[in-house]
Image (cartoon, rainbow, N blue to C red):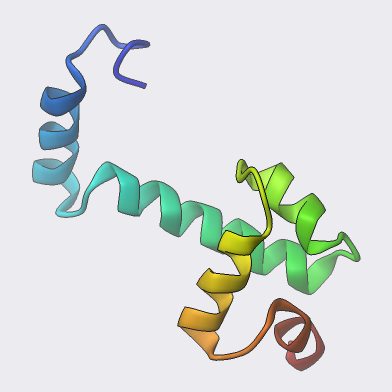
Length: 81
């Protein structure tokens, strides 16, 4: 994103943090998490397909994120929602 706007990465990161009160990385992770939750709830896509769709190279991170947030697996989350 920094390259797109011709900014230094550190400078852009600081601007985003100052404006939004959170790091760029956290903002992106939160957006991805919302999309992951939506896809798990409303589609029959596999966790691997969801990972690919939201920009992760493998599904392990999704398992960790759902476990951290809800203390369950993505499959359990899908059944309970």
